[in-house]
Amino acid sequence: MQADNCAVKPLLTIAIPTYNRANFLDLCLKRIGEEVDSLSADQCKLVKLYVSNNASTDNTTEIISRYKLKAAGEFEVVNNPENIGGERNVAQCYTAATTPYVWVLGDDDLVLPNKLCRVLDSLIRQDIDILYVNGYSYSDDYLDEPSRGKGNSGIEVSSSALEFVRRTHVMLTFITALVVRTGVKVELVSEVVKGSNLPQLGWILPLVRDGKKFVILRDRVYAAKIGNSGGYGAINVFGRNFSNIANAIFKDQPKLARAIQNGTIVTWFPTYIMSCRQGETGYVPENMSVDLKRVFQGNWRYYVFLAPLMVLPIVFARLYFLLIRVMRLLFRAFLI
Image (cartoon, rainbow, N blue to C red; front, side, top):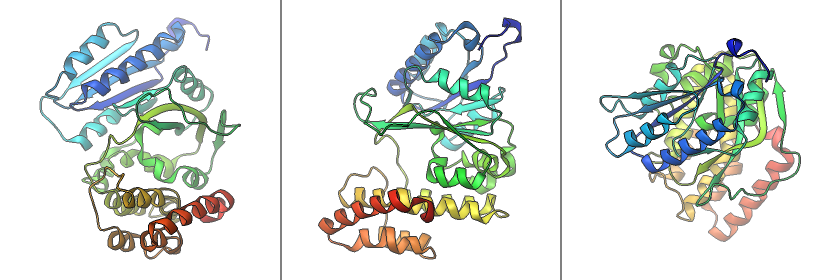
């Protein structure tokens, strides 16, 4: 982007909520710093960095200070005098942003090389409400990128909230995958999301509901650390809470709420069930058969995509899981 220096105004805030994860934050800030340093002088002026430190007791403050001293652009730090809770800390990252767009980034997630400029280009070129960016999970080396098919770059633009939800559904809960327009009055929906472990839905779902333009960036932009979340029940959060919040915020657009539930059943919970049966999940244990049925029994997809995986012997469940993947590939548009 070429512009007169005086005309360049900040466009994007990268906001990081953190608490006692100094080692992860160190690498997160390192990658952001490297990305900012790779930008042109004008592009640097488009980016602000904001860290909300939730009264960490490790060396988080030292890590933040080190990067703030050598930051190329604007870098704001809020050190909460007391722990205000994870939900409020995440929400603070959104409400404090003064730029047109904010990207709330997990403190253990990493921006991949040469991808910040892709995000900026997408925002500059499109007057959008939500930019969805792709990524992948990693265990040890964040540059160990899984292979993928051809044609997975470029952007898709849509004015249909329903089509956007059908493409993203459960990923609307993942803050790192979403660069969003600022200005939503979060307090209007705070009671709906309070205690849900999903405070971000207080601004993301209203943006979906009222938005006019959505963009999906097919490029992989971030790497997310595997097994670094949890401390709650996945069925409670991504099943009951997610569905209840979607029903409340989309009460006048029930097709959107239904598409979220359908996508979560078809694409996310089958993998979760298999992980549980193989002892690989990091979430709080729940009674799968009882809790999933309680949340989803009114949806026929539960009986096709979830119930068999819970009752079949594990050998047959693995085969059925492969069948589900084929069904998703062939009939996805009819299932969500």
